[in-house]
Length: 620
Image (cartoon, rainbow, N blue to C red; front, side):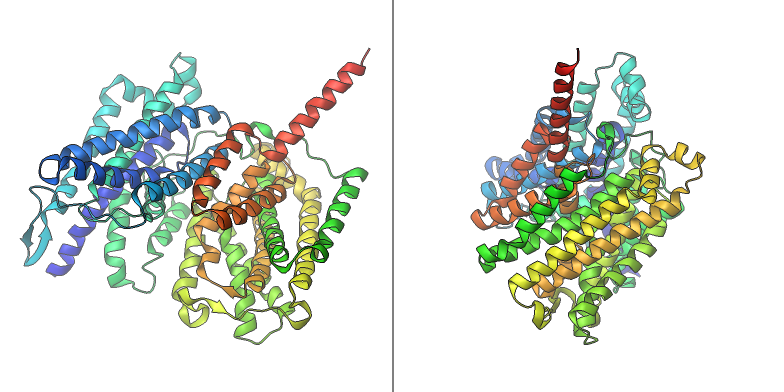
């Protein structure tokens, strides 16, 4: 019994650290509506800067000053990033802000590697809290007791600031109605900056305080941002008390999950998040989202099918692509094959995001299910490549049918987070069901049939399937179903008034996107000859969003173009530098600032402006 009590108290200590990070994330989202993917990077910076300051000041005298100074230092860095980058794109669609913070996270991760090196850095014990006490016969670190006391104190301070200060009243007002706050003459820029600084300060403080418990390392950012997002969503976006409650729930699930549910311990918190969102869509203590911009924001334009010139241009591009194996070697053919697969993957997500206004943070689930479905059909059931690809598509469709049925009951960020939860559930099954999936050893020996075994032939097969699928997705976009899906994207209330059933149409759109993503995943399995849990990872889902957003959400073909550029660039950068994340992140930031409509969107805007100017010049 004493062991379980100590385990419970240990969970409370972890909850305190998690609350510091998640509360900052919740505060930032509540006011700015930015889902800050760089929040984990600021947490990591807090740990690294804290380690450096402690080393310079001396652990005996400078530990606590170093902890506080590191939090202020991280807040200063965050403020600078907000002023130079995020302030420029607050009027852009919200997903572009997510893309910008994701790019910041990439840059920070490689900068940390460049400055502090690849080794883990273990901080010293906190002065005055180096020992342990006897807790029901079990030793318990005194530093963990300090953390347990710290979380309620921070919660109380945040409550006082928000309830008893003019600034706090303005922040709460902005959370409810930003437009009204602006109409009253409040300078929203500086309000947003101060809120962002506070949130980043809490993240940096949380990272610095972890030094006596955890070594500073380069995996801290991804690990903590995942858990923080789960906490914020369970508690309710923008609700600090809800974040506090959810941090306790998540930390206790982590503490006891390995003991009580060892088979599903990895995915337990995501199961809980999915259940909470299905039962209470706005989290435990959250409120319904305020009216937000659509996924495409102000860049929604009138979409038109290709005319005669457009069809001829596409046919020429496909014909030119078909000649590539004749002029290029096997390496370039393999790279081109991979780019084609990810063009199809991005096109499927683009159909859902741009066509339906549904931002999925877990689209890699269906890519991965397609990969595993094809691999299992080939290796476990002895089916041929052709039938195995069909099996992969079927498994992806089944996953999209089941997950989509729940997801389309939500909207906005909560829809996105539920897709993430289901993707993590799929990932955990792939990781832990070793008898079928091989676990982290994966499934190897997934090779094409003899007639498609050469790089050139598999490239032609991939080109035919990818080009045909993208053309089919475009045809669906301009079908009556596609118009119904876009009507729901633009105005759900008006669409339902004329008889369009939202859930049914969006569910069908979700399944269609999942099926094409599964085809891409099946082809990827045969290209690489193996399947691993990375095929369902969060990073692959984020890559899909990056491709679509770089191309342009408000366009018909943005996902395809964005994927071609981003994947080609990624492969080239990775092969030429050890700091590929730094280079990619910097390029993404530059593109977001220069082309807030995406590359294709910027080109279409330029062409429309040029056409308008020419017509105006011809008018009498």
